[in-house]
Image (cartoon, rainbow, N blue to C red):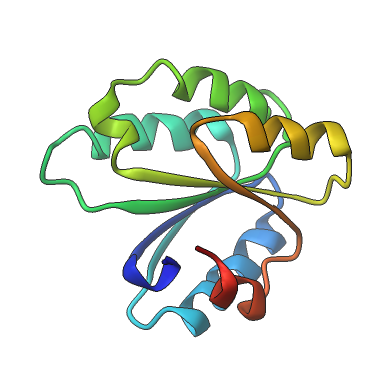
Length: 130
């Protein structure tokens, strides 16, 4: 359940969406710590360097699909190659404005993605997440 987590990462090239996500996560989860990235490469580097320890706290990642330089799907291709210890600490939700059934199906079959959420990330949505 989402309320069992205290750490959150949002990777989206839209700073306004990142601000909205941060505010809504903090409204929904008391004491939430939210870090945002506007490019997927920096977010992936952060995850690799901060979640490789067995004692690392678990984190929820909200990942946009359509971003310049590295898309969310390219991020996922890289994430599939990180070691299992890192994967065990990161719960990934795709967060996108795309209504494409192809994107939804791709998220559904990806073993590292928990769910696909259409933007915006609202408090009501957060409260219903597994």
